[in-house]
Structures are given as structure tokens and as C-alpha cells.
Image 1 (tube, rainbow, N blue to C red):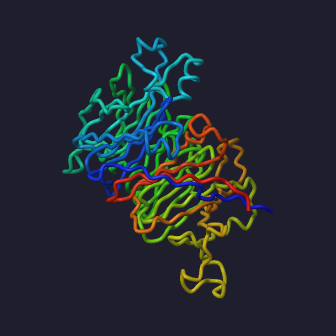
Image 2 (cartoon, helix red, strand yellow; image 1 turned 45 degrees about the horizontal axis):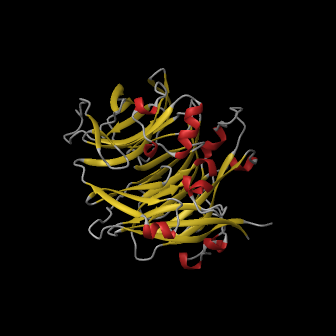
Image 3 (cartoon, rainbow, N blue to C red; image 1 turned 90 degrees about the vertical axis):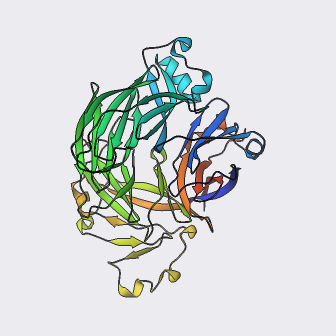
Amino acid sequence: MKKETYILENSFTIPLNSEVQFEYYSNIDYLITYDEIYLCTSTRKGINTTSVALPFNSKNINEKCKNEVKIIDNMIRYKFIRIMNDDILNKQQANISNDNMDFQTKSKSLENNFIEKNYLLVFGRAISLYNPKNLEFMHQCQPQLSNQQSMLPLLYTAAASYKCFIVIGSNAGHVLLGQIKNDKIEILQITNQTYFPITDIDINDNGIIAVAFDEGEIDTYKIKDGILVPLSSHSDDNNEIITQIQIGDYILASYESGQIRLFSYNEKDIFLKCEMDLGYSEIKGMDYWNSQNIFTVIVDDFIGVWEIKKDDKIKSEFNQKMRTTTDLYKYTISDNSSESNKPNNYDNIIDTNSGTNTSLHKSDKSKDAISLNDYNEELYSLNIEMQWSYQCKSKYLSGIKFLKHLNSEAFNTDVKHNYKYIAVVAYDYSEINIYSITLTSN
């Protein structure tokens, strides 16, 4: 039986100004218009925007690449957002140009009587909107909130968008619901159920919101009639600090302790399905490609891509708790295996580039899980398999992002392919590395 894996097809290096170096944690995001891709990265100098002409290839990277740095005070993080304007159809009236609309958005939105506009949302001590193309300031919002449980200043630490709404979190546990109209932010609702800092927020295509707190709690919400409605919650007994969260069909969370956890969820509960331990190092970045059921993670100088696989029916012995651990380079030791089968050290373990599957923790909570697809309470399990890995020698990686839309033929070369592009940056370096991997059968 042939096994499908990804191999490195090409790698590109986008140079930046030598004075622009990436931070210990580097946020990466991107935006695609008709003729360019914009890569936005956080550096010691501020926000760096790199534009590359399409189609995306070596020639355009070398000849049609521009970099611009914008210094923004009191910035913590930023995110490209697309806001739906369903009440304005005339582009002149909406003040929306083709340059500020992505390819897929324009064709679909006009058919459904709305237009989406792109913004760069920057948050820290305030919440600000910028033009994503030229980094021109547009609007700033600074809600008056209290931080009674801490002597530290109030900061906005996470944000995500859905349709015309934005959801923002603070270091004092506030969850804010706002909307953007006429290039201005309007706050609609503020909730504060805990004083723990919010570390990350993500929203899936169905509008389910996942909020992560630094003591390990995960809460989900939905927006109904312009109000945040709490759904389900999951608490971590060990109070592990969550560094990043992503939600699609499942919830993925990365932890400061070097773990990745995979959850299923519905409107009533969140279930831990499996867990992967990447060793002693903090996970600096993670991205989840929901439609492909794959996710990518960086730890130190290592890049890995895993696939999420679902088994609709599970055996009765699944209820027995099985615990495994995975070291930094994707190898597996099972506590349930015999001592003779356990390697004495990591030097004896097989390299996963040869196709070894990555084992993981299977939580005994999985027997209570409910399928998101049909809510029939049929038991199922989730597994994670290593698909591709790469080691960037002498680099300490600090940010990673799937460039998902570059897989469409319109934005690439004329040759049809199945590339998956990944953008990576490293601490103290002045370049963006782009890796293109392609699916093969062995």
C-alpha cells in the first residue's frame, strides 16, 4: 500500500533590510490581492510588510519584492482581518478599491450582495486599524476597562474576526465584541468572567470562537443577535500555559511546556482527544489548515507538519488509558510497550522522514466524546501522523504560517501542482524563508 508524504520541492528566501531583525516571538500574517501577496511580520523595528508580485516564483521574489517598516508604539500583536460590509454595494461609496480586496472575496461577495474589506488590526494598549497595503493609520479605539486584580497596565493581547465582528481579549480576562463600520471600531459588548490573561483567540468558518487563557482554560462562544453567547469550557488541572489556539473542525492548542493537544467540541463540552509532547522546548508557533486536516509547528530549529486522522469507530480496548511521549524530533516511546522494545536513548530511534507515524496520548475522556458532524454520540478517536519535517540548522525559529491561498492556480505559475507553502522566520535574522512542499506517494 502506497503511503502519501510531503517532500520539500523548493525553498525561497525573501531578504529584508539588514537592520530589520525578527524578535523572540514573531507574528506572521498575509494578505493576497489581485497582483500581489503581502507578508506582514513583527520585527524589532516594528511591523514589516513585504510585497511580492504574483505569480509567486523566484523571478518575482528577486525582481518585484518590496519591504516597508512601520514603527507602532505599544504594539503587542496584529492580525489581518476581512470585514463584511453587507449594507454597501457601491465600491465608491464604500471607499473600497480593488487593491484592498482579495481575489476570492470579490467574486463571491458581489454575488451575495456584500463586500469584504481588508484591514490590519493592531492591538496592545489600544486597538487600531491600519490600511494593510501602505500601513496608513485609519482609526483607534481604547475602551475604558478596569484591571483591579493586577498592578500591570491593561493590554489587549489577542483578536480575531468573523463577518463584520471582531473579538478581542485582554490580559485581565476581558472578552470584547466589536464591529467595524465605515473604517471605525465600535465596541458592542464586554464580558469578564475571569481575571486570567487571555493568550489567544481564533474563530472558525461557522463562527465558533475559541478563547485560550494562560492558566490552561479554553472557552468557546458564538455570536447571536450581536451578543457573545458562552458555549462550552475546558479546564486544565495542571494549569499549563497555552501559547496559541486554533479552531476548525477541531481545536488545537500549543503549550509553553512543549505540548500540542487536540480537542473535539460541541456546544455543550470540549473533549481532550489526544496529546503530543515535543520535549523540553516551548512551542514558538503553530498554524492549522482545517480544510486539509493538517497543522504545522516550530520548536527550536525544527519544522513539522502533521495530519489529523479520524477513526469513526473505536475498539473497546480504547477505553484503557494509553500514554506515550514524543521527543523533539518526532519519535515515540510507549509506556505500555515492553521494556525490551524501548530505546535506551533518542539516538536509537527511527527518523520520521522514513515514514514513521507519530504516536500520542489518547485521553480516557474520549469515550465521552460527541461527533461534531452528526451529534449522534458515536464513539470515535483522533490520531496524528507526521507528514513532513525539516531542520533549519543554526536558526532559532520564531514564527510560522501556512500561505494557504498560494495553492490556487491563479496565484502561482501556469503549471498545475499541489504545493503547500509555509512561511518561516527566525530570531535575529533578516529574511523570510518560504518552503514549498508537495504530496508524493511512496
